[in-house]
Image (cartoon, rainbow, N blue to C red; front, side, top):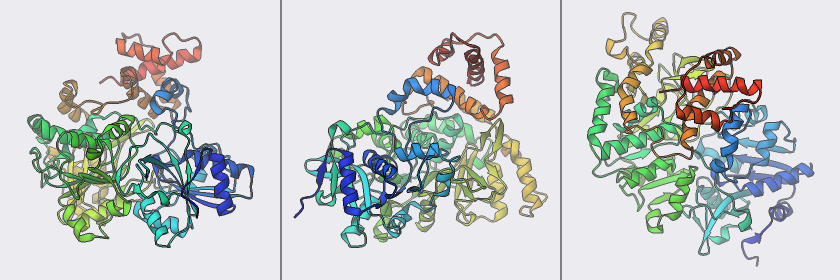
Amino acid sequence: MTIKPVIHTCSDALASAIIEQTGKRIQLALPLGLGKANHIANALVERALTDDTIHLQIFTALTLERPELNSELKRRFFEPALNRLFGDYPDLAYAKLLRAGRLPQNIVVNEFFFQAGQWLKIPKAQQNYIPVNYSYALACLLDNGVNVLAQLVTHDGGEYNLSCNPDITADLLKARREGHARFIFAAQINRQLPFMFGDSQIQAQEVDLLLDNPNADHELYNAPKRPVSLADQAIGLHAARLVRDGGTLQIGIGSIGDAVSHALILRHKHNAIFRKLVDELTSRNAAACNDFHDDEPFQEGIYGMSEMFVDGFLRLAENGILKREVDGAVLHGAFFVECRDFYQRLREMPAKERAHFQMKAVSFTNEIFGDELNKRRARVKASFINNAMLATLRGSIISDALENGAVVSGVGGQYNFVAQALALDDAFSIITLNATRQSKDETVSNITWSYGHETIPWHLRDKVITEYGVANLRGKSDAQAIAAMLAIADSRFQNDLLEKAKAAGKIDPDWFIPEAYRHNTPDHIKKKLQSARKAGTLPVFPFGTDFTETEQRLLPAMALLKQKSHSKRALFHLFINGLIPVDLTAAETACLARMQLNKPASLKEYGYQKILTAALLKSRE
């Protein structure tokens, strides 16, 4: 009898074992995000590159990549910090080949979720994208006859552990045990992964092939914290009022997720400050006030039930907010990919404490089906918070793709949680989005009359939050919903949106936007929140960052340059503005030195210096 697992120290030898057992048609599943066994995947890609009789089809999601240094200023910013920010995380060969347009026909990559915006201009990636809800990805894998699963695992005391990604793998292994699937489980040990409890715990006999080479251990992908704007902070403050004591919470990764977590901590630990900030935001705008709101500190605490286990949940637990237990856990999550500090805190956490953060299959987190009665009892007063790109006046939500069909990210679990909120008693589906965005050199509204694509249809509308307040849409007529959405739109776009609604006959022609909602501007938000930012109450990085102080100062300037990079005219204007003599602060002088532009050695560097100088001045708060 073969003793499982068969251990290899070389990824090429393990790839040979896979081909020997499966033949030359390999249907490879790689977990979403962090859990990919990069060395195994790369070894199989290399075999398919050298032998075109091998057909390799890869099914995955959220391919993680170190940033592309595709511009001179981006190279100057990231190159000196690349190892510090991303460590020795190994590149995925299939991703580099896709980007270069060199992926051969015998290798096909199908993803169901993209790293946001990273694959818009890669035709093969767009053509092979599979639109599927996260909880339905299992069926997609089974239907496509997956015969190899390659995943990172950790190891402790003879037990193998799925750590960050039990999401689909736990159910795949269950399907195999029940005879509904046949595949090789090829695992790769990475001792940087924290040992997690719940569905991440598996039996040793589940693993068929194991790549175990301590020298191949690599740093986990680091997702550096992003700056939290004042608009994000305003959204967080509004959202924090919708989280009920004794209730249930989902939040996501990113600046708005950090803003929500930070606002909840303010509400609990610094309640007077929280109330003052909320009063500042809502004093003139009734739309910012919700039919239901809760400003009190937490007594019972909340339970986290989220497809993604993000750093914000650890912060909430550390501050005595995430403490309502369900089956011994204060949080059930399906996967994580986070910052370096998050991984370290989990690894160093005592096992007894870490056991309160349990990892589960996505079929558990994203659905109420299966043990429905107990899930309903646990998921009381739920606030499921998800982010979006756009929303229409009638309440349709656009989160994953453009109206021309180009996929930005993916639906993931957003639809699942919207449907779940509507199916549960006393639950909220909360969609957050910034009221505006920069498109090339223009400010445009993220609330639009109509759009040629939708992620969440209008008949599932519930609550939408921008920096200007909360729109309560559930159970409202179209005219009422339109009025509520206009109240949280940026005032520069309200008149045009209202005229389109009137032209469509969807709101009374005599109706007008009340004066209280006519002051929705960035200046209004800045006026209300800037003093709290300067006082450190609403910091740019509420939970710290891997960026140095100089890099933090550079980030808004780099973001501005990214917006302007599509227009030669805009860049020329920046260059002209940079020629105007002005006294730079010490921090701004340090920024030029960090980018090696303090002493330009060529006309090209001189031009970059002036453009960056203008961007630094324009991004001053």
